[in-house]
Length: 72
Image 1 (cartoon, rainbow, N blue to C red):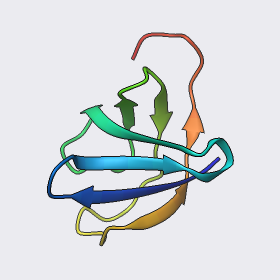
Image 2: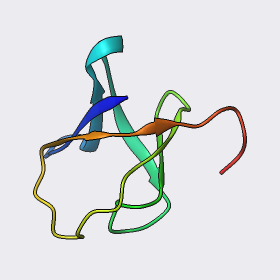
Image 3: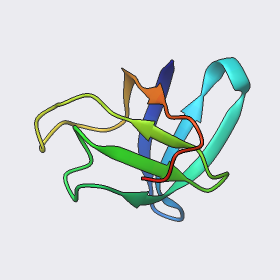
């Protein structure tokens, strides 16, 4: 699914899913660089992000894959 990731001063990293009209803060990441691992958002979803350079500029729209109910 297409998602937009951005950084805001008040919320830190957040994600927006246009098809669901959902915006949630990112509460946990597998890797500090964000890319190539999973992220957990405030509603409990776990999304796999693509490999990208650590210095990738935000905001950015990427294709992410939602995981099932398995634990990360």
